Structure formats: C-alpha cells, structure tokens
Length: 286
Image 1: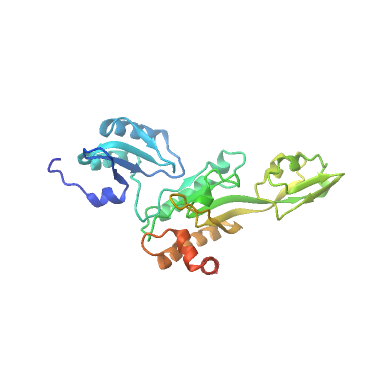
Image 2: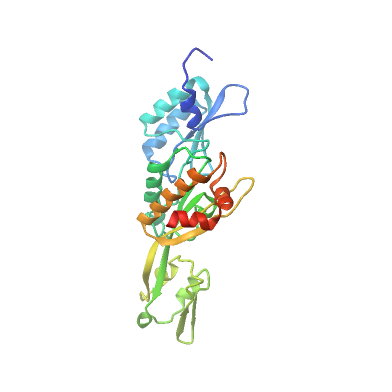
C-alpha cells in the first residue's frame, strides 16, 4: 500500500466489503434502484470492472451490483470514475438499503402499479438514511409477489378490488378459471363473488371478454416487519388499497417509529413485536 490518502468513511458507509483473500482486495457494492440500469451505466460498469477489478460484475440477491477484486488503493478512483457514468456506490450497516422492485404496469401484463416509480421515490427520500438497524424496502406490482414484499422490513404491493356488473355477464366461467383463490363461482347461470377470499390480483378484469368485471378500488397494500436471514419472519399486512399520499405517510411514520422505539442493531419486525403491533399500528395510522 502506498502513501495515498484514503477516505475510509466514504468507503465503509458505502458498502466497501473486504474479501477473504489475504491481499487488500475488496468488493464495491453499487446503488441500483429497482433493478433498472441504462446501457450507458452498463458500459461504465464494464469498463470500470476491467480497469479496477477482474472484469466481473456480481448481481446480488437484491438487484444490486458488486465489482470484486478491487485493491484498496484504487477504491476512490473507481468510485470517481463510476460517478462520471452515473453509477454510485451502495450502502451497508444500519441504514436504508437499496430498494428492489419489479417492472410493474409499465411492462408486465399483471402489473397493477408503477412499481419503478414508487421505488425511485422511496430511494430518493430514504436511501442510506441512518437508522438503528438496516431497513429494506420492496415494491411489487401485484399479488404474485415477485419481489417478496412480505420478506422485507416494509413491502409495497399493488392491488385492485373488482366489482361484478351482472347485466354484462355471459356466465362463461373464464373468471372462475383464472381466479387463483377460488373467490368466484359460476354455476347454473349464476355468479357468486366471495370478497373475503379475493387477493386483489385483478385477473378477472384481464380475462373477461365482456367487461363484466370492473375496477372498484385500487391502490397499495403495505406489509411490515418481514425479514429473512438466520431468524426469518414473514411481514404482517398493515393496510390495503391506500392511495399514494397515504402510502408515503405510512412509510414516513414507520421510519419515525423505528427511530424512536428500536434498540441498536434491532430489525423493524423485532421492534414491532417487542412494542406491540397494535401500538405500532395506532402510531402509523393515526
């Protein structure tokens, strides 16, 4: 190692991770929002990984990227060069991590919300915010749950409540066929809709050839307290079909609750469990 001055705080908080090799080699964690990258960003990554690493880029389990085999002396030069290509370092430690998201209704036929837009808004406001423990967001476009919102500290899921228009219905039974939770029953020229079973996926609207199913309500369902790791726990549904303003009020209040109530290193779900879900719910939804 030479006499080069190194900003260790910049590296440590930004996800610069020591590798197992005896040499001073590190993996550089990079910031990716919702798994979206431009072609120009990809070119910058390819060039930087060849110049400062071994020409490899690792895709993490949370849609992030890491350039490995980076010598410590080259770390800040790597970051400076990546920033010219609009690529920025990630984060680690007790902070808000990168937001994961599916492609939502911009691309996916099943998507009910613009998941990419919501992920960007969350990232802009909360990414790398210091908290008592790490905090992970996930945004998924529909109840197919591709981005596993129930496994994150706070998960956002698109949802749609259908309404049946009987005078448009031909009782063909297609909606019953596609319904994944048996919430629709078509028999002998009659249709029954069991709202308590409905998972708000909207498949009945997509399949209906006569528009006998229409949109009653739509919005965001919120899950809280999920995590994986050594002690996994599924998140709990806090509320469903709220509008965007309400969603971001819930996020803000949830983060505030975590700041107030959590002990150092504690995960959000553990804080909720210790304090009590009803108390948390009252705080967030008041």
